[in-house]
Length: 264
Ligand SMILES: Nc1ncnc2c1ncn2[C@@H]1O[C@H](COP(=O)(O)OP(=O)(O)OP(=O)(O)O)[C@@H](O)[C@H]1O
Image (cartoon, rainbow, N blue to C red; front, side, top):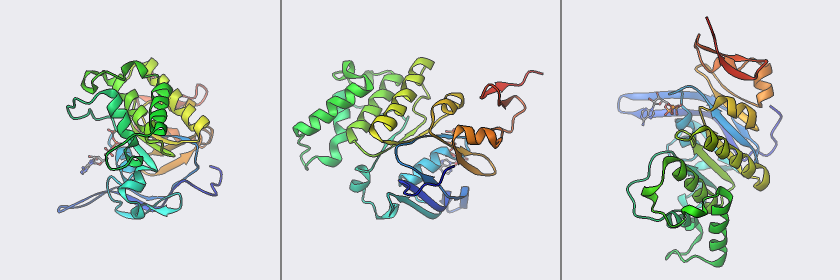
């Protein structure tokens, strides 16, 4: 991976995991990440390897066990909730609690870090909200109630809310988990466009490996033994992708640049 001189996200000797009365459960340690802004990063790894734990740690949803996270050269712990909300937005896949909010109201909530205490929306706020609907192609859903949306529609609307929040960094945890192939590709294409055209730094965890290999500017691979960051070409040439699964069922095919089933 080429040298990153001014990373927007940096981790130094970061350990992630859980600490409870029973003890400390370290999920991954010694993570030294340097991420350049304007990149679409896909975070890959098998079920339970620690992708969500990493995303939650670098977004201050849960504390690090050890080490540091820096965003734009500032230590994560120095961010208030308010300043963090202006810096990064988080898109999670969980269904929303039952709410009678309309889609418009939900997306408008993305402006909360910028509005005054009564939530007054300025003309600028309204324009950003409108643009967020347009970029995600969700204008037709504006007046629907959130609980009426399909999983795929909700996912797009949550991305619209993140856009309304207008942060330089957007972090998404498995945003296409419930989407069909068309909507999955549509979502990744949108994320790629946001990174490229608007210089957003986008980190997305996904099990859509073959798609990630084609579209990501950088890949973060979580394997049982190590964390590897690089471009698709670098990871292919270093034979890193076969570390993802210790399975006899599938392997990475260098010619096709895809994982394929091993036929016996
Ligand atoms: N709140 C928690 N307390 C303790 N351990 C947890 C907690 N949440 C997750 N874990 C454990 O941390 C490990 C990593 O989980 P995590 O959800 O980060 O994996 P993941 O890579 O996102 O998995 P998946 O692809 O299945 O979503 C798992 O062993 C899981 O059991």
